Image (cartoon, rainbow over all chains, first blue to last red; front, side):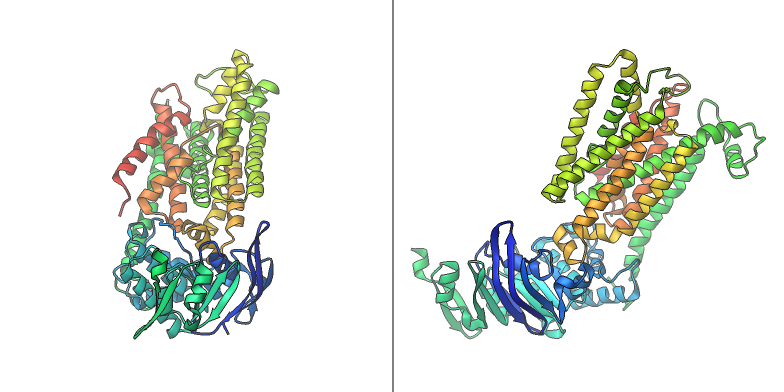
Length: 255
Length: 356
């Protein structure tokens, strides 16, 4: 098991944001957190790598308690791709190299360079690597962010809305990369996402949040019209195509 | 780009090599400027004699007193103060992620000016003498410096206190700094309103930053503080690169962003306070040198911090040299020249954009 969360609770000042959250993620698994805006999806991700401090509960990555680890140690285990990334005047190569920060004590080692090389090759970013990130498109920048998280050598990757603001082609490409990394290495991923159909295509399991709690958890079978109605307050139909289930807003939703 | 497993790629080597070359070129320019700065003035000293007097230390040399007692400490003070203010500026801009961050814009300099005004007018530590060949003399410059330093620390403490209450976000720190700066400016104006002519002149003179004020002892103190603080910033270069990518990304990379921001602010404010307290208000260096360097070598702090240190030294030393020559034998305070020299360069680079 890569991630195990028990009884997680998080309050922002006096407001309850997450309550009684328990779930686990296995090796080579992609888990997607679904739910409406403001339900606590991003907060949950940020609790996992201690950007936020949970009020109570336990978070184990591998067999180690996140709350007892130093921040650089957490960064060696958990890679985080934030929803938005600042565009500094750095080349993609430098921006990816930055992912080695938890491992770099003073200067860059041969292993750091080898890791960066391998990821650039793997993600076919050779042409991109010497370009400045402040001149990149959203899709290119997202690739750089994911590459940076991969060179951290994490066992768990957290991706906050990795496909928001990307066109269809880039959405597919980014998630294919995530999928390849997860399936090809001993890595797992937890993502937040709004597009249920994209999530269905690339995720193994789902966590549906409602009212700051887990409403449903499991495989694609939890994506039902009833659950979506409960969580999003939207009427949908779930059609089963050759490629898998597809969520379509029902006629009632347009009336 | 061609990647060759584990070796730094040639294209990347070339790219970083260009940045290192710019820094080395800057150091050479700074050294030549140092010799030039010592050579020129009311009395011109040949380059060879400057070189010989400094490096061979021939005490019998006719230039020895001028060089060792006047021009060398002044030139070195220019380099140290320029480097210190510039590195404080680049640190403030990076940790606050705000291009307007500098000791001047964050109110540290205003606080020092208020401290000097308070010292001169309320504590009676200063009166005007003359502005001729020698510098203005404050009756008790040490008290003035200490009071200015004290108020610098007060300004820093207030900014940090507000940050503690509201969180160490860049917005809170910048806005608090601007508010504190305005408050101290108003306080200075209030004191000046009730000052007599001599006190007013002393306060105004103090606020014109001047590198000619420091003696060897003060220069060594400023030098040690500048070196120690610069080393702190250099040690944290990877942290600043991470913060540049955004707070959340930095935290995801294991950086304790709040602590780095807080300690960085304390160190940069302390460094600025030391320099401003001894030399007076020297604006623009801390703001513009990081931007000039960014445009020449980019945002990577591995190169940006040393580059900015060199750039600060060059700008302030060049300004001081020009300030001594423009109206010779009269000497202009360097603070007037920093903006005159730095602004056109900065505007040119702003229009030209980044160097590729």
